[in-house]
Each structure stands twice: as C-alpha cells, then as structure tokens.
Length: 512
Image 1 (tube, helix red, strand yellow):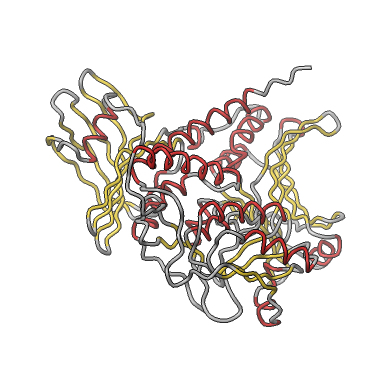
Image 2 (cartoon, helix red, strand yellow):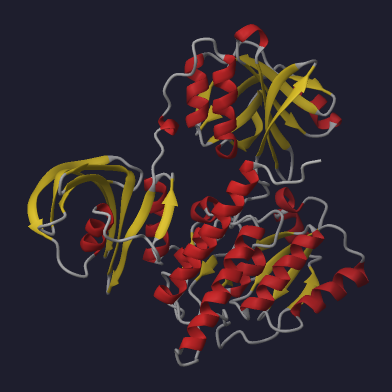
C-alpha cells in the first residue's frame, strides 16, 4: 500500500512552508516584537458569564439560534482559558456563541483561547447586552477560533495592529520575533484565516488600531458570518461522474451538483435545511434562480421542489454560462415565494480548477476562454508610510516581457493621501542599464476598478531607495522578492482595497 502523500498534498505543503517563511521574514522589516497588549484602561482579567437577557437573545436570534450566549469581557491573560473551561463544564454548555468585549491581552493566551473555542465548536461575535463592545489585538486572535465568526451590522468593531514590546531590539529579540511570527502565521492557517492578515496587521503601529470593515474581514476570512470553507469533490453515481461544490453555513448548506448527461452540462442547485422547512418553502409557487456575483441568472420557468431535507432545482448550463461560472467568486442560490426570498451563498473559488477540468471533459467543443485562465503572479514591491501618505506598488511577474535591456510589465499602485484614495494600472517600461522607467500607458481608477482617466509618462530616472527602484530591480531580475509579499494569482483590486482599508485606519462600524 502506498502511503506517500499525493502530488496535490505535497504541493500544498510546499506552498504552506514557502508562505510561512516569506511572511515570517516580514517580521524583521515591519515589527518590533510580539505580545498583543490590552490598553491601560482594560487590564481587568477576562471573565465569562451567560447572557440571559431576552432582548439580547431575540435581537441576535438569526445568528445565535438555540445556542447559549456567553459574554467574554476584559483582558486576555494567563488563566483565561481555564475560566472558560470551568463555565462550560459547570453549566453543561454544548453549543454557544462567545460575544467578545476586549481590547486585547497576551498573544499566546489569545491563540490558546481561540484553539479552545474551536475545539468546543463554538461561534464568536462582538457585542454585549448594554453599551458598546470592541474586539482588538489579541482579542482578534481569540475571535478567529470561532467556527462561525460573525461580523454583522449589530457587531462591534474588530481591530488589528502589529506586535509590540518594550524590549530593546537585539539579535535575540529579532530571532524571537521571527519565531513568534511563524507561530502566528501557522495559527492563522490552522483557523482558516488568510495569512495576509499578518502582513496587513504589520502595517499598523503597535500604538494604533486599524478597524476592519466587514467586507475586509470577510475577504481575509477572519470573519465568515457562519460559513465554513467550501469544498469541491468529483464522485460517481451509477458509473457516471459528477462534481459537487458545497458550503456549510450556520443556518443551512448550499450545494451545486454538476453532471454531464450525453455531453450536456447541467446543474442541480440545492438548499439543505430540515424536511419541515423544505416542505414549507416549496409549498407555494416559487421562482428559483441563482446570482453570480450579485447578478441574477438562470431564472427558469419552473420553480423549486422539496426532496427530503432540501429545496432543489435543475438548470442546463451552456458553454458560455460554464465559462462565467468559472469566473464567478460567489454564487447565491435563491428561492422566491411571493415576496419572500430565501437562500444562501456558495463560494466557488476553491473549486475553480476542479470546475474547469470537469467542464472541459464534459463539453464536446471545449470551454470558451476564461479570464481565470490568465493567471497573474503578483508581488508587492513597495509599501511606504510617510506621514499622511501611504502607498503600495505591485508588479505582475507573469506580464514581464524582455527585449535586451528593456523590460515591460504590468504595474499596480495604490495611494492614500488625506481623503484621497486612488488606484493605478500601468504598462511600464524599464531601462535596466540606465536605471530609468516610463509608463507607456497608465490608468487611474476608483477602488472598484472603474477607470477615471488615463495618461502616459516619459522616461525619468528612478530615485535610489524608492518604491520605483524596488519595482525596477524586481522587473529586471536584479532583486529577488525575499521579504516582500508574494500574492500570486489574486485580484489586484481586491489587494488594493485591502491595503486601503487597513492603511487608512479610519473605518468605524455602524452603531445601532
């Protein structure tokens, strides 16, 4: 029997170690040292108590369900994990949501608390029965332990910043920083959070806090609003292959089942609930459809039907729609009954490559070209924080074209200055010998990618020590991106929005 790991598993492990080493190396560039410390005004040890207030339970019924609501308030210190363990044991609690109100504490204790919350399969949120609540610094580490991590309009703010210490920098403290950073990155990966959170936290001074918008926290998977990571699996039924993409949420499971009868691609979409809910949802005439990144598609003339514990409908998938599904980040499955719309989302990104392979095998004429086929290899070449101005530059290494000493490449930029937030996309040309560059074309965009204006720039010398120089040296192959952020095939505008959200540090959540 061959017990060797599969090539895909080996590749995943290699990518994990590369990512871990790259991000850990950033510590010496951005950070001082490691404990997340609570503010001086909140040094009381964290305590836990069950929230019995009926009004609080009713207001949070959609996310709390039948679970117990537990308030966790104060500083995360030694003994915090034991206090939660004691409450859970004494009250016999099997299902709960932890509502945090804490400005931080010790990093190690925050991660230990997060691991215990994950072992208990509890959810996390930010709030309290009366007054405002926050969750920042080491509290964000503990919050990451929730199976469901809610950050809704009712939640308090969620904040991050870089590690801090009072110790004088030495070779020993620098070594400790690297080890602590690697441990923290491992923790983020273990909790299912994007390791990029580490790099973004590093951009915020230890004496400041960047409050994450819900969209940013969701993109980083620090929050998931009750959705576990989606899975994509190929199986067989009656000797016929199928592809299943499925995602569990706190209130239901969304599923898309793709199959290929006689060379025709089809999809059965399903919302898996309970038999009682399924029958109730399908009892009245319904309209069934999906949304691809918010746009309604495949409405169909027929509605949905209840089969056991699921509400389901089937649609034919032509080749062009198959291509659009591969380009889609999020598909929502919707069932409308009268004025009531029910449904849930399904993250298609983890199954993108599997979908592409399955669709190509199914469709006789193959699959139309997809934007997802044009992989990028993005690397952040510069992050600068100069007073009120913050900037970032990225280069797509897959776009690099060489002609002698001249190099052409796609370069992305972002800048924050005062209230201005601007993104740029340039086709740049670099003269490696003369140490100069020009923009053959440059477009200035809103953060959603909408083009505002375009221009071009002539040859100009690149200033030593500038972000432009590190970009030039990377393009010319004279600088390896050690200690820089390798982002791979990510959406550049999503990265720019993350940079702006963290770099501006001025987002405040809505208050009820």
